[in-house]
Image 1: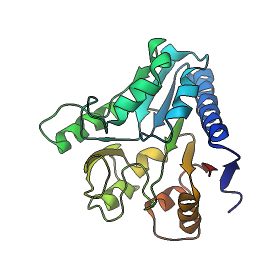
Image 2: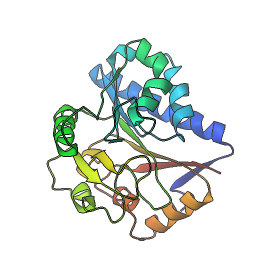
Image 3: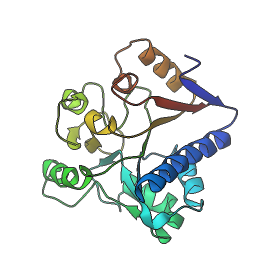
Image 4: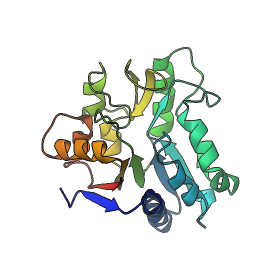
Length: 229
């Protein structure tokens, strides 16, 4: 397990490591293709890492930021992941980086998912930064959600799907990248804090039935787990 979790002495060090990991992946994509893409998670935990990332000197006009998942809520909503990224990444966006929304105003969740799927399917993701809840969910793959099996199905052709998760904080109606989409990313990183989440990750690595476990083995790229108390 020591090989799975990279422990940092402080949360400040953790956020710096996450920012550096995203920047390194973007720089690799820029060097190889002339453009790069990072898929980012919402929530309050990674916001300091995004601020550190946005302060870096990268070729921002050729960088696209995408979302790992989103609430079916406009960016004016306090729970919107897009809203958080617009704020935390503001310096990079001001210098020409693009943020590709997952939410769009549509008549219903399924229509919004179909629209997002069309936008996100062509993306080549250099790195996806994930979070995890104490229930073992990552992205919007919630235990017990009716759409969980579809989200984890490697045979699905969909990049973004609709999820209804009554237990999800912020809003039960969600849009999320699928497992099939995330395993196409060149790199995966997980940013977590606190002993409870570290223990959940250890249990998942040992075979416990948590959604995060779907990204702990091939065909997913190696998951770099970054943690601090």
